[in-house]
Image (cartoon, rainbow, N blue to C red; front, side, top):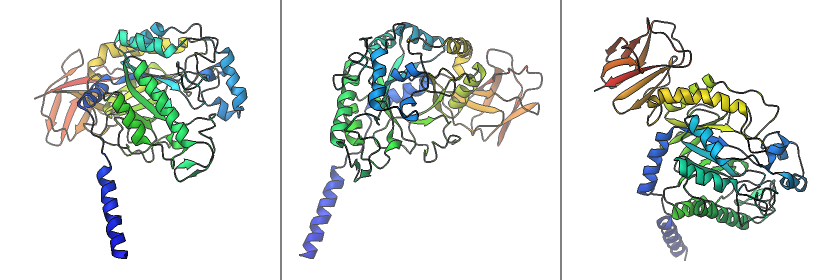
Length: 430
């Protein structure tokens, strides 16, 4: 009997392994990944009823506001100045190629016309309109890709049971199966009802790292509804099966200044890094630590050099307007990108490690040396460059002297007027 039981156990185990499916991206998904890498620069938008309090998107949690009290914010959330055309024009003018916006954040409030919860902008506010539908249509019209941020965690739903102990992959309190179904139903709405959706940006896994999030079902559903949609998850871990891009929060790939990326092993998927324009994701009226156009441009350059997209976040005001400080700064960024975009768009990075002087991007036979830190010597050098360089010029300007040896390429900067933001040397290879 013991031998037979072992044989049956082995057969069952082999059968279970055979039934496990591995994710094979569809051809349209692979093409979407390539296009996503080409876009390089996107706009992240955190917007919800929390903007009324002007204290960031975590205000309910950080100020310990009871959920029933917090929900009253919806009663007077009425963003009459929201203008989808203005938002998309803002992104395009800055040189951004895609927008990722919060469809539902940790407070559980849905910023779209969902039928799966009455706690949404159409049914629970005096606004009674769906800004995400307007934004989706305008993005499609203007050739801007649209991705939806979607929170996995929920501070208020009873079936999620925030704060509950996790045992055997699910919360002791609440109804985990109900919550998983709710998320799948909402994701189905977002993917099937809103035109031109290209990606889903998950967040919140870190709140319940030991839970069974049913990613095989959730990711499988998304790819079944639209195989081209890119799935990413801000779990701060190595990529999981079924994901199509990997993101890094407030850090470049391979860095861990924030402490978020300790286990974020860089995978083989397209990469994205996100950062805030000040120190807040959602609108915070006291946060005046605005990044300069130079800081934003150099972050974009360094992200590209690390082979990643740069997703820059803003938090619109409760009336639906974007702060004028953001507009002024990103006008300058947009002017720079318009002039130097060939060294950013459609490029790939991670050609050589980042250097003290800056970084390197490539597009076909063209290499772009981005000198963001003026060298102390009258030259910079690029180590371990495998390509043979035949020509070097300032981007859109004069020739630059260079010398290539088997182990290093020297670019001589003597006589070159260094740009305080980024001096770009274009190298042609054979």
